[in-house]
Length: 294
Image 1 (spheres, rainbow, N blue to C red):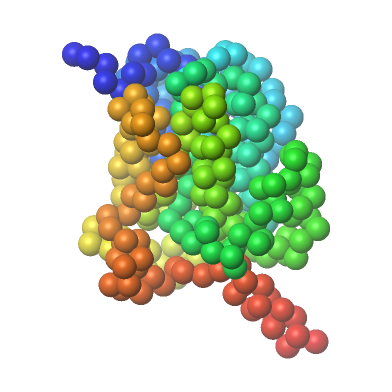
Image 2: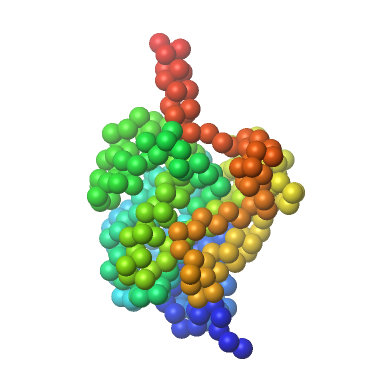
């Protein structure tokens, strides 16, 4: 059988490989013959991976140490790791969900991706609306910052740092979707493709967190549209494995929404999208609350 996906013997890096969509992705890549380097805080227990590398994605030094253990030339990078923000503050959430990916791309992958290689991120439908001015003006100072420390400083000097951690999740996904547009242009000269999968509601280790935020799993199911069920991790892993494969060799800059049609109905105004918001709205609510408390 011909290797249409082209992963046989290829060096791939998967962050967040210990559970959920990251684990499902790593398992598929092992089955497709890839040499999988799995990065996560928790131990990755997948038979057949090349190496598990304990990594704290909220710390630049830990990321640097992890990539010292990975071959110099990388064929595919899968940025899947993330936290919901329920158990972390705004800055820590953004470090893990956004700044780590930004740092890895700009300071590591820029020198280590092979020609005709690929980068793909797992972002979220929570990042729909990334192009709106009421969102861009808040995240652009972070994504345009020159270094890890610069990005952290951009958050620390902003009122955003006082928002709850779960707001950092949405903030990061908006910014990551923008970065796909930015990076696909920057990496094009190296013949490196950059894409993302935007998952809808999926049954992972974060499901309880998201259910808590919106008042129970029944409410979470309302976001699944005609599917009427949470997606399986494998149903998100398959699209991202496709995007980084040779089967998608002419696909770059794509934000692949995988939510069983829910978002496109809202875009077409067939139905209302209850999750549509901007950080302008959040900041106005924050200022109003401060005013009322004073």
